[in-house]
Image (cartoon, rainbow, N blue to C red; front, side):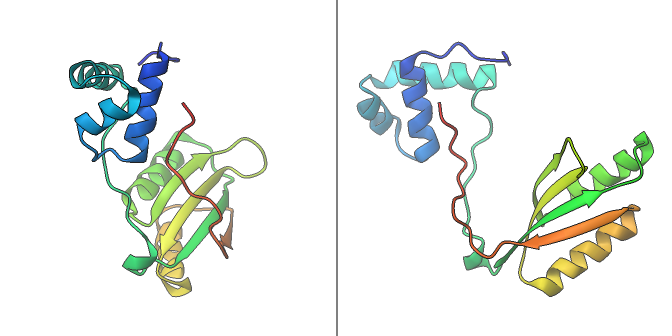
Length: 155
């Protein structure tokens, strides 16, 4: 995929529509962006081929599924060798509770966004994680209120 895909204004309008609702019909997208169905489909296919558009999925409401607690987990480690990192990354990637994981610059090495039912479920997650890998310091921050959450990128 190009570092910065060469997208024109129509491509960007199509992407905006797809991000709002990827299940809408091709006819609806074409009407909203001021084009016809075939050129819109060709552009979507091209953007998929370039990797601009990845997989399609649905967004679930975590609270309606009983996942009411969102924790941001700050991890500091004294270990930086490849073996530790491989075990840590494998452990994090295998856990469905982890919604996001980022390696950071600065005092904190990693941050995880973890969705669970409650504090007891978080503790079970935490205990399993520290069984898998040695971690120097873990700080868990409970989100009291989600103010904004989106998957939509400004295109």
